[in-house]
Amino acid sequence: MSLRVLADREVKNDPTRTLKKSLKQLQINPATWEDFAQDRPAWRRSAKTGSAIYEANRITAAKAKRVTRKSPAPRTNTANAQALPT
Image 1 (cartoon, helix red, strand yellow):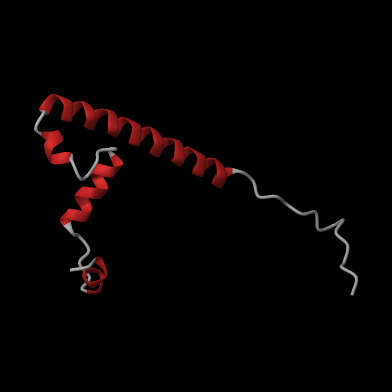
Image 2 (cartoon, rainbow, N blue to C red):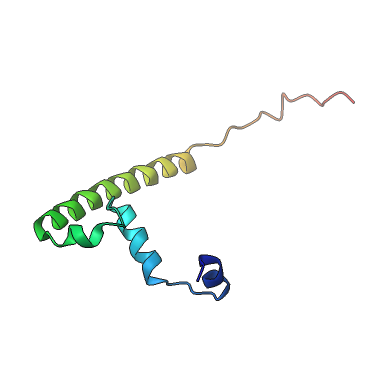
């Protein structure tokens, strides 16, 4: 079944899609994760470093978004503004 058909049926929590999204966030290749998971210490290291990178990027993006939101909007001085010529 295509994803479009699944979307039409309103399948919101497709486990495969959720797993692939999580693996991509941890920078683990979704095609080879099963083989990679066989080596438990390497898997744990990769998951830890991937999650640290993801969290750092998430926090940086949130801070940038917060700065943008908190910065004052540019104000126009309406007292000195002139009417546009018609």
